[in-house]
Amino acid sequence: MNEYSTDNTEALLRRAHLLMDQGRHVDAAEWFQQALAINPEDAHTLSQLALCWVHDPARRARAVDAARQAIALAPDISYHHAVLAITLIEIARPGQDGLIREAGAAATKALELDPESSLAHSIQGLSLLRLHKYQGAESAARRALALNTADTLATQVLAMALLNQHKEGDLKSLVDWQLSENPEDAAAHVSAGFQALRQGQHRKACDHFREALRIDPSSNAAREGLIHSFRARSLIYRLYLQFCHFMLRFGRKGSGAVMLTGYVGYRFAFASLKDSHPAIAWLLAGLWLVFALWTFLARGLGSALMLADRFVRMAIRPKERWEGACVGGMVLLALLCLAFGLGRSDLGLVLASLACFLSAIPVASAFSNEHHIGKWIDLAVAVVGGGAALLFVAVVVLNLPVRAEFLLFQTAAFSGIAISWMRMLGVWAR
Image (cartoon, rainbow, N blue to C red; front, side):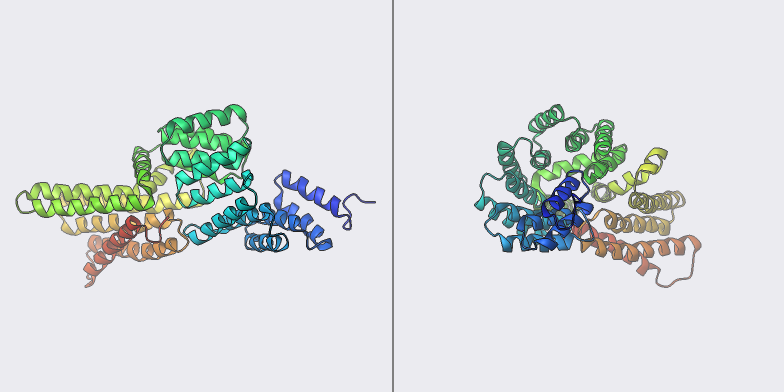
């Protein structure tokens, strides 16, 4: 008799679990489905099927349904609630905090049913991490590790929570422990990579992220970290990373408040000095503009500088290439217009430069914003504002008889101002 006969449930489940252990979740799902065809009310098999489906983008929504079915069949089993929390976190797109909070509630229910579940503590920590509640995420991860020191998810959550709280000593101890305990663990190298990136050691970070990808080619965290380390070859982007890490001290809402306070302080200083010391006032305005442009364009410029490296061009994805080309192109055009405008005392070219600089903000935001709604708004504004800036440059350079040329400048300028305020206030931004 065939060991994996379709009427042998135990054999089907053994085969499915073997495939799961090998990371072949899509194949494992087929065997779990065959087992469910024999026994459709097996709650544990439904939970396992849900865990397989979260690895398949085409079936992630069905994973949530499978997890809910498992809970309906066995509502007093902690594991099923933990699986539901995992599926909700996996399907949540950036900005969908409601799903993350629902996942946190499911993890809390799992803990009520089994306070000793390291998985439930880890998932609770992950949900808090996604909500930027780093202190709570750290506490949950530490509770999970106290129950199971081999819990890799808890270790990853703890590493990211420590990183975002600037607990350098604790993070170093954790990373050293990870690497000594399991040097072939991709998560350990990801943690070490982000630690090195935080310290400005982008080459060391790059080595760790490459090693993580060698161990686990599907690691999205390692791939993102590698791209960050490529961008960090640029001093502009390294300074930007340090600025971002500094702002993380204040939290997501606090950082917006800090930027808003800085803007109000700048406006007050400008108004106070404009009449008595106009040179200082306009110098202050110029410095604020440079600072604002740098905070929004640093990542895009880092992507643009990546394109100069032949090896990096082979490693990055099309999105990073387009980001570098679009943002870098707008900034380069702005610099050329500024140089010729100042050299020729041509106000039109100077305005064209300003239009390009400001319209580059929504262009850069369209690539960097991960919010599931905000990224499309940014893209629409980038198309309108960037297009208006390019038309305005053409009108100025070619001296075209267009009556609405100032309207083009206003459209380009206001597109940048609008997106910068939305990002500063955290509106549809992640």
